Length: 260
Ligand SMILES: NC(=O)c1ccc[n+]([C@@H]2O[C@H](COP(=O)([O-])OP(=O)(O)OC[C@H]3O[C@@H](n4cnc5c(N)ncnc54)[C@H](O)[C@@H]3O)[C@@H](O)[C@H]2O)c1
Image (cartoon, rainbow, N blue to C red; front, side, top):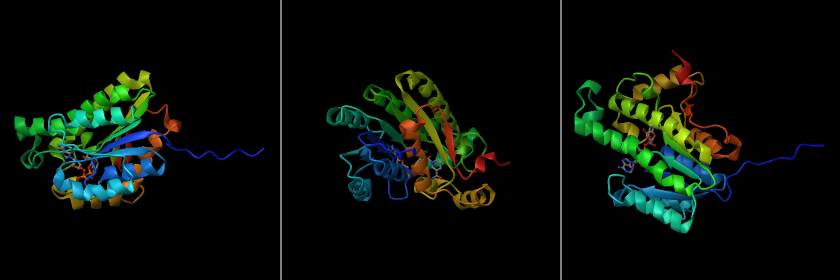
């Protein structure tokens, strides 16, 4: 008897992807793969200026829901979840792929960070994830998977990553707590930790090219990751096949994090 072929898929699943700025965004790689595996996707854009770059990508994804979302704007996040509740009545996958730090906070020493810069960094890069998980919980009635994007600079002191490393450490901890809290409801929570990728957010990090160069030379795979690599791994973790994996910080970095 031959073993039948089973194609893993996300047909009928509903996914919200937050963080597409353009076709280099990690969130685009994730949305692309979730759609490729059959999920219906909801997409957000930061503001009117960003809309024209995101709209063609939302069209390619046949996004049923396309809404503005600046997590600093009161009510916008709630409006996105209300629309999902009304239109879909459920949510299966949430991808949080946003981060922000004011230049004066990001580009200085951690020891010098002002209260406002610290708060602004944590608010967008960490608290927004906690809030999204809170709003997703009642919609993930049959379980689901929640993702956020982190970086190795949370674990090790990476030159120029500065206060964002502190925010990512808090974010990874939030992932573990929320994974424990929502696990009994069948909701899984992961941090995805890609190696450096030349995106718009990355352009705010000083000497980013050196980071890319180091990653390429030192990673066991001797290669830089792409948003496609990150998207494929994320979509895999959203499959039922990965139902007993939760609370992970999953490195998609060619193995860089195991090297001294
Ligand atoms: N690029 C890298 O090397 C790298 C590596 C590891 C992790 N990450 C993380 O991946 C995530 C996505 O970043 P990216 O590299 O794809 O860059 P990107 O610039 O394409 O995406 C960042 C997104 O954050 C959004 N954003 C910023 N402030 C916001 C706000 N107030 N409200 C709503 N959205 C807001 C932007 O609109 C943008 O879509 C971030 O969390 C980043 O820290 C990036």
